[in-house]
Image (cartoon, each protein chain N blue to C red):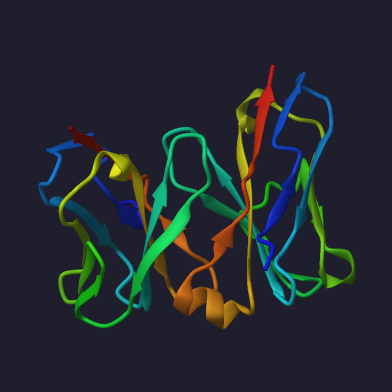
Length: 110
Length: 117
């Protein structure tokens, strides 16, 4: 079992829709959780982090964490074609190391 | 503030040749990370430095990979000899300290795309 699992996609949504990206992790001791966005040919860019159960909102982005279910999600409201990218979920066991999933490719169609 | 700077951006070498990558972290950042990202995969940690000390190198293939961070600032990652399977993007990141990185994430440089032919 991979430590951090994501559906590789692609996930295709129409412009203006809500995109829902999901991630599960295996280490119950994980403390912090991150979403990175990676455009093709570019390096990952941190867009959100969360470490408490519940929701955290930042503009059109909402991160959701459920530690009991070992589940993290990212919602993107009013999706735009510029949101088309690969979204990487990362988990911190608290050692300074981030463990990444393989990423989910999101396609937002005009 | 300037971001994490990496060079070169691209490198194409023949197998069995040596190659080196350079990273300059954000000023004041004591923790430096080298990650490798294979095509279609997420980044994987190779080595983490706290100042000049390598504190986590468990995933570094030590038979051919080496790294150094002299004076606790710039870092160099070397592969000798390179193999076809080393083709990947090598990413450097930094954070003020390990705790900051663990809690708030960190910023990656633009990466070096290595192609071994």
